[in-house]
Length: 145
Ligand SMILES: *[C@@H]1O[C@H](CO)[C@@H](O)[C@H](O)[C@H]1NC(C)=O
Image (cartoon, rainbow, N blue to C red):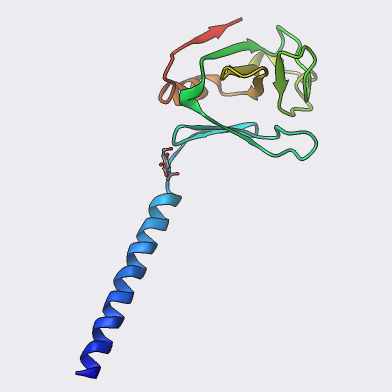
């Protein structure tokens, strides 16, 4: 009888353990829709890397809170390398933002989530970025400047 109960205990411990393991595996495997040096899109979240000064910590945004996405080619407009110049947008760090030889292949993207500062970052593979963010945007409001 005692042996039997030990058996039951071990079994239930194992099933709890495997449930927990399955849960962790599930949590870990949200597919990545887009990732570059400056941003990442996964499971409805936009991670803007190198965001905060001076820690370089990321900012994570729920994409369904984004009201507008604005895009301009890096050779067509100036934006700060890091921080805010105009008190309208906070730019994540990209020390090459204004010094690229192929600036026509890079973009300054800013997202508006209804806060004082829009959040800006660099994108290189714009086509892939657009496919990824469109998948999660609630308001399909993408403007090219
Ligand atoms: C994906 O996002 C949903 C909603 O925010 C959240 O509940 C879920 O835990 C996330 N999944 C992963 C794997 O991060």
